[in-house]
Image (cartoon, rainbow, N blue to C red; front, side, top):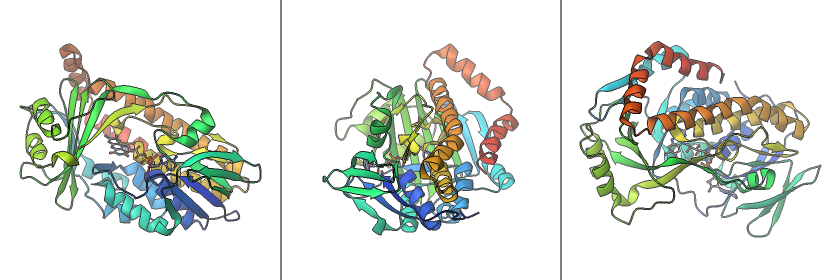
Length: 388
Ligand SMILES: Cc1cc2nc3c(=O)[nH]c(=O)nc-3n(C[C@H](O)[C@H](O)[C@H](O)COP(=O)(O)OP(=O)(O)OC[C@H]3O[C@@H](n4cnc5c(N)ncnc54)[C@H](O)[C@@H]3O)c2cc1C
């Protein structure tokens, strides 16, 4: 379903050309609005990692005509599994069957391919690089954003799609510290190695550590690793792979092979943070989306997916309400509870998955093993159906 424009075209200022900002640009363009995206970075360098665009995000992308383009930029898995370091399954989910039942694809892809698709449909000419949003003023009849070069630009609405450390959020809600999860992460892209099981997305749970394997098509595999660690840690250049080989020594194939096949300097390390949910993220003509609004830990693979859902709903609201401020309130009301619930669920899952105590891990694994796969599948179905 495409967005029917029931209002005059708007000019929307978007801070941030990440997944959320670019999806919003695509949705606004399709609906006949104009927009300018301001991106702090002076070039769009996509992080060397993959991403899973889950079925609920595919449903949202379908509403702006991008589901097929995104699906063809990656690989669709057949099944997913949570494994023990030995390789034994704790639980499995039949993803191919679920995709058929729900009529929506799950796509595992390189972030560069996802953002390439979004940039192509948004129009690179509308993205102004090397300009950060540093402040804004809601003038009542419009909103004026101040940029890092000192210039100002006026539009009908300002959307902070500027990520975890959003400047627009600081201006709207004040500064509050991020919440550190207790674990850090590493991500990499490896060429396909023979020990990878085609079509299977897996996450292996050990003692305060996890390893994920995600085939992304085009002869590549995305992998990620987590480890309990104090915040702010850094790896000395050239030491990451050796360290990870040590942490995951003795774990099942293809973990060691994937690490060995990934250049050390292409591994990205990121401490995992979120923010406790808030009840308001819009004020007047200014709102937030994606990580700026509701940053979440990546345990449910939903941060980018929720940014996509936000973007599609926001464009719909701006297209159906003649009053911009009211449209932003409606957007927030449609999105808040769902996104905030996922923030909380992701946090809880992460705390469970990163457990160190042997008893806790034994009970956790038993619990996950005993949950019937039908029940786990129902959770996925609910998330997808409620996105429609
Ligand atoms: C290890 C890991 C794995 C993940 N896996 C998944 C997954 O499988 N599936 C999933 O859906 N999500 C996943 N995520 C989450 C996902 O990456 C984020 O939720 C998503 O990127 C958020 O998109 P965004 O557009 O809100 O923000 P971002 O992608 O952070 O984009 C923000 C953009 O704004 C720019 N910017 C910053 N400040 C300013 C400013 N002041 N002015 C202008 N521009 C600015 C930045 O340069 C950036 O380009 C994962 C995250 C991590 C850390």
